[in-house]
Image (cartoon, rainbow, N blue to C red; front, top):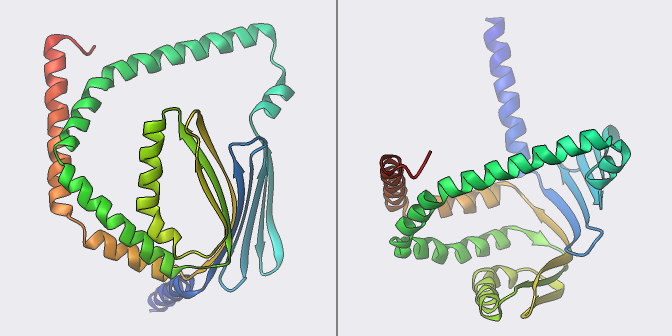
Length: 262
C-alpha cells in the first residue's frame, strides 16, 4: 500500500512538473554570425521562472557551456574543436600517411555507395514528382503555421542580416521569391529593429548575422503544431510514401537481376 501511494505521489509530482514546464515562460536570447570567420554563436535559455539557466557561447573553435540551477552553477564545460585539436596532437609522418590513406579509402567507399543509391533516389524523387498537388497542399499550409507560431511568441525588436546566392541569377531569384512567399507572413508579425535580406546574384554565398530575444509558453506553439499536423492530408501522404517505397524496391530488384548493384 505504501508503494502504491509513493508511486501515485511520484506520478502526480511528474505531471505537475510537466504542466509547470508547459505553462512557465521560456526566454531565449540568441546572437549569431555565420558565413564570416570567425563564426560566433551565443545562446541563453531561461526556464521555470528563472530557476534554470543555460548559456552556451561558441567563438570559432572554442565552445563554453554553463548551467545554473537556482542561481548556483552546477555545470561547466569547455571544448576545443577542429584545427586547434589537430594542431595540438601533431601526429607523426607515418601516422599522418596512414590517416590520409584511411580517409581516401572512406571517400572511395562513399562514392561507390552514392553510385549504388543514385538510381533508387531518382526513382523516389520521380514518385514524389507525380504528387505535386500533395506537396503544394502542404506548402500552402506552411505560411499559416508560421503565422500562428509567430503570434504565440513575444519578442523584442530583432536584428537580421542575410545574404545568399546560388551562383546562378535565375536560381537565386527563385529562392529569393520563395523565401518571401513562405516566410513573409511570419516575419511581418515580428518587430524588427533592422531587417536586411539581400541576394548575391553573381556568386555562391551564404552569410547571416543577427540578434533575437523571444519569450513564449511552450504549450501555445505545441498546440499550433498539433493543429497543423491534425489538419494535414495524412492519408494521401501515407499512400504516396508507400508508392515511393514500392517503386524503390522494384527498381532495386530490377537492378539486382540486371547486375547493376553489387
